[in-house]
Image (tube, rainbow, N blue to C red; front, side):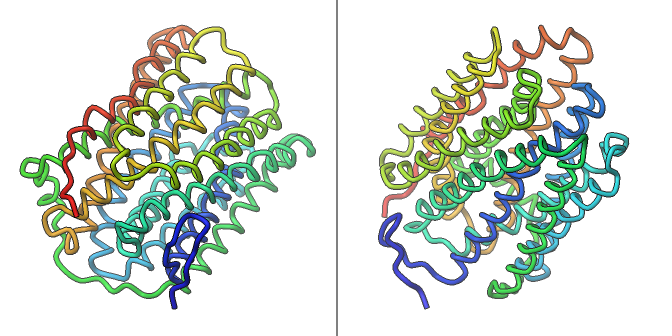
Length: 405
């Protein structure tokens, strides 16, 4: 039975909506604990930018390929089972990191592939379930509250992991942190058994929805925006943590960076979900994009830890301002598109294809920069270009015209 939930407005909180939020929060805590530190773990073993790029490239290549397969499975079997497969692969990734230990850098592509497959299954199922379980009047609440849970995990995870890692010798702390992440993903698998089964049916029409871009201007605009979203994310998802570690040589400093970022983000997500109304979404996306690019300008010259902490604060404000209305707009575009109810899975798959195409271009550009040029000189220049990705989202979203209700 649905209950009223007033923290973020007058929202009907159903059992499945609550479970989806808890699973998302558990995922966020596990990722906050370990994902940033996996990159540092590998960096300490190799010290090569190119190795980190290859690891992350394998993730973003396998992720869209898995999305296509996961989409087909989601039309053949229960969506909840697809979610469970994704979480299981993520757990397997951490198990492999624990098994390989100090030799993890030898298996960069394998580890990245496991993570990419896990992300593909998880996010396909999670996004489809989000689309099915939420309604237009609950999406801003869901995206905002999920942001709050992610920020909470982001506050607890990095500082706790940084503390644990620095309190133990060599790689022992990393082993403990990765073990906790493994346990959290096992818990998420357990939670998934409580979700209401969602049987699948219908024909899988991935290419038809890809072609829909030629017929639906809103869909074409959103997928173009998705590409530029990925263009920034691909490199920034791993290079900032490396910058923090290089600047300080301390995992605890990296944890502090995460704590500040997520603490501010926690407040910003709450405010964004309450204050950004439907008629103000485009303006919020523009403001968020501008702040995100200003943050990039801060860190490309004379980098130091203080600047990185200011950067953390700036993006903590900007991301909620941009992402809450942007994600809601994306789901509304899908919801109003051709055969949305029947083809929701295909729409989610195509969306993720474009995000990951942007990430692939981003990381390939980074790999080229550090391979063919001096890394210290080429990386700042590259960041100036790809860092504009989120700012360019507005150029497409401003033309989206949704039907009025």
